[in-house]
Structures are given as C-alpha cells and as structure tokens.
Length: 277
Ligand SMILES: [Zn+2]
Image (cartoon, rainbow, N blue to C red; front, side):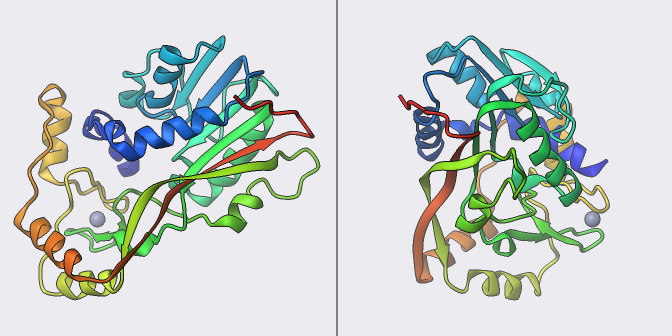
C-alpha cells in the first residue's frame, strides 16, 4: 500500500525534474541510441511521459506506447498508454521493435525485477534500451522513518548497477538480447565520509522524512505529501530547510570526486545491424 502511495504522489511527477541539464543530456544520449529501423517502441515505467512525449514531439516513428503502474503519472502521458506493472505487460510476444526501461529497474523488488526482465525480453522484437544509475551508493541516501524507524533509500532505489550487472542483465538464456553499446551521462559528486557524518548527525535528532518520502514499511508520510495529494494543482517546491542548508555547507567541506550518474545500455537480439542515427 505504501509504495503505491509513493508512486501516486503528484509532487514527484509534476516536480519538473526533467528540465535539469543532466536530464536533457540523458534524453539526448538515449535518442542517439535508437536505430533508424525502429517503427514501434514501448517505454516500460514511462512515468509522466518525459521520454514518450518528447518522442512524439521530435522523432515521429509510428507507434509510441507507454506503460506505468501509477495512474497519477499516466495522466501526464500524451500517447498510447496502459496502467500495468513491469512484470505483467499487456502485450504480445515481439510486439515492439524497441522496448525501453529508463530509471525503472533500480526500483523493483527481486520477484518483480526478475519477471520484468523476462517480460521486456518477451515483448521486444529487435532492440532493448535500459538506463539506470551507475554504481550508485544506495546506503549513502538512506533515511529513517520517524514512526517505525525502518531505514530506506530516499528514492526507493533497491539495487545498484555496475559494468558487470549491465553486461549480464539478461542472463544466459538462448534468446537473450546482447549488449551492443553503453553510454554514460550526467554527473554525480561523491563525498568521502558523508554517510558516516549523516549517521552521526542522525543519532542526535529525531528523524524526519523529506517531502516526497513515504515509509515503505508502515506508510508514514510527511505532512507535505498529504497536502500535495489534496492540492495537486498548487504544487510548489519548498525552499531548503535549515538542516538542508547545513548539509550543503558540510558537503562543501568534505573531499569529493565525480563520476557518471547514469549508464544507458543498448542491447539487440541476434546480430541486428543497428544502423544508428
Ligand atoms: Zn515507518
């Protein structure tokens, strides 16, 4: 019930995250990996339609379809769309030339994850495009529920991906899509010692949840989430709190390094000539 509440939170889908420079770069990189021969595509976990709506505007290819389990998100999708979970896609075998899943796999619990991988393989005819956060440190973004004290990743990310997991994503079955190309984009800054510092600070204060968070264990939500569900038309982003400002200040004092934020992987069945644009 509670993770459903998270994904039905209008604030997430109308937050305007897609206008960041990193997101614009990611969308451009994704489009550069779409072969000219593709005339139908399915976006699994299409969210608010950031990708499919953009494809409609800029790259007319025939059939553009989105599927998501969130009705709130789908209300913003402007093309053919279905309410469904990634592990049970309402389509025929090989129905789409290209099947995409962008920033989806890292959210899936193990049972759904494995079936979703099979479903993507089943409905894809020639190409698969996957994008996930690259080498994400899930533990560095853990937050605690003030009610039941369970800890969870603030973006509901449940798994991390590196070069090996991307290479072996579809396992060893006979009819598996083969990795053709990867692209890295976006930038994330890692701060040395930040997770230790956060744990130290958390030990001295009552935990609070950020605006978008809903506890996956007990369903506790911050007041802002309840308000945003009632007044979706009045959504505005809150200014940073004092503790967030202190956090930013402390980050600036820690040594840090940068790495790519996402990896985008292009797979094809057999030896298809991808004929990239
Ligand atoms: Zn809780």
